[in-house]
Image 1 (spheres, rainbow, N blue to C red):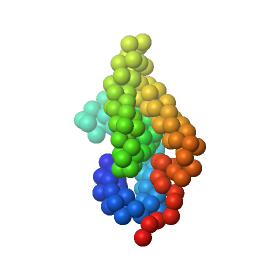
Image 2: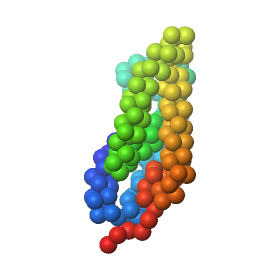
Image 3: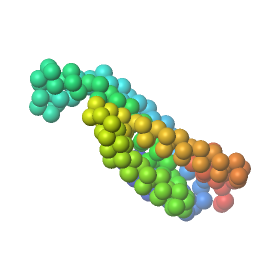
Length: 168
């Protein structure tokens, strides 16, 4: 969440100065760094999922093996979740509070909602609740951003950041 906070502070200054080029550069570099970092973390978690129970004090081989599939399923939602949260921060920073609040709220509600929905069918499906609701929500946000960009070509297709030249 550190990148969201830094982007909120630094990006807020850039918005106030109408430095849209700098803001786009900051956002793109941050999103790239976040994506690489979360992908690397997810890969590590996938590779070492059977060792996580040991970190929490349980080295029973049966428990370790039983954790592998659920943890890997749950980890698969990390990248779209973090990108979704990051885009919500960018949208709020630009004053698109309704859009940011709706998607932030849906993200927060998707977590327990997905777990409860999947758990209602089977305890084994409970871990699918995270990715099953996060991926479509991220896709819907990208679609909304794209449609708003199509209606106003002065906004980038990336987080609706202004494209017009910086004002001095």
